[in-house]
Image (cartoon, rainbow, N blue to C red):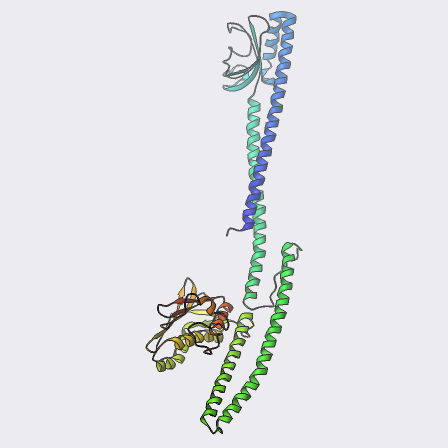
Length: 452
């Protein structure tokens, strides 16, 4: 996984390596300039002393001095040569006047191929060319092989050092990246538990009093407040539901008793309409409680594997008589062995709501198909009908609570059926999708599958 921390570590390592290379290069240039200056100073000093010898003793004096100095070449790496204008060698440790490859005023650079005096083939030399007198040429120089070798060693050491420092920076960055990833993974696991309904879960603290801990403390405070609010809401809703159920139950009993003593048809019709309204209120109240539990994740039972082929088969048998009575062909097709981790009662209620809607809006002679299959490692439960369907403009809002669609008569249903299905899907880490079945509606309940 490419993470921001890893990319940042790589950028830091690359920046550090670039800065180190630039620093080493500057040090190399300054060191080389200093060495060159020192070499030129030594050559100039050596040349002046030879000119002084020539001024004091003439050609014999400078020749004697050159022979003496040339004999110590192996110790000081000096190059000397005195020749006439024709190139005839008078004294020095070079066999012939060298071919000059470059000349900057009195300064020249060349390579010598000579084995006398300890010199090896192809060694670079920097020298000064002077004319002590007309017809005489004096060359005083220094072998630069040691300096070249020093530069190579310096470049090699700098490269190794840069590589080691870069690897060290990458190692430190990788370690920091793994540390951050571990913290992120711990936070992610906690968030998944919280989204799954465990509102008592809190983000872990590492105890380092760093930015992650400071953020976790703030989020934990927010979660604690959310948990209190949710608990108050859930308790209030359950209390209200309990307080409403008893009066509605008594109201229904009294209406049923009144049906036995009414004298007119009009009175009976009125009481039956009131009974239907009470039943509708009880269904709405039950749906609201189920939605609240699903959205808050406060379902009492722990999730467990639910065999979809068994559950959907039982639902198919339950709704088959109703479908036959309405003249609708109901078929059930389930892949054997498919299961999800969740709450069986809520999942069954969600699929039952989809079947209720499908049978309600499918005309006689139509068909309803209930299926389950595995798609990309997920369990997909589908309910397809051949009814009027839902227009593409209304599908997104159809899962909202108390939404009335254009093709639904006023007062028909509670407007909470699809909202409950969507809430149950979210509780189980899935989603509800509504698509065109051409004709009709295709409802897809997409849920994470239990690994085989």
